[in-house]
Image 1 (cartoon, helix red, strand yellow):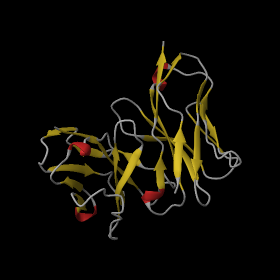
Image 2: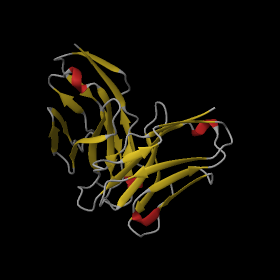
Image 3: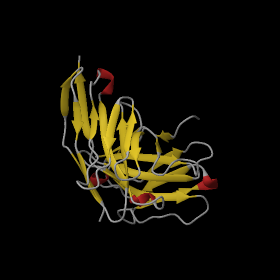
Length: 114
Length: 115
């Protein structure tokens, strides 16, 4: 079945450090890939997405590139801020059909220290 | 409201009691989802409603779990005879036909603790 494996947390960085959160996936067909973020006390929200191989999603300084050859969608940011402290979820969707096909990873807790 | 609203935000109950969790989706969103988030786990799909179609209940973990959506809007997730393993955060999400694929709008969740 479809699955998403994320880098285990928690991750603690100093402000302005470089961030990478690894995400790999297993899927039948051609998935779309997503990163969701959950800030403290808030619901999950879509951060960025990519729908086909070699696409790069970007938002709020975060980027992730859909790598079909390595089945990966690693999240990166060049200079993190304290306000980036949150839980990050990698997810995939094989089609635009059933919600069951939106499969999430276990989440990675990021803490950025001033 | 502007976002997905869930209530209660926290619920503590005793083993064996029934609980109801409510979700009010974004106005105009035809799709509604329930997920469960256990400590250290990813989001586990429970059930999906789309318009007037029959719901996809394939993620419900047992027959103690049920959900309904009245009038195509508010949804209630009911857990009967709660067990300690039901303790988790229950997340509701909605989406619009106009949303891009995979874009769900989540509520803040209802944290259930079964003693």
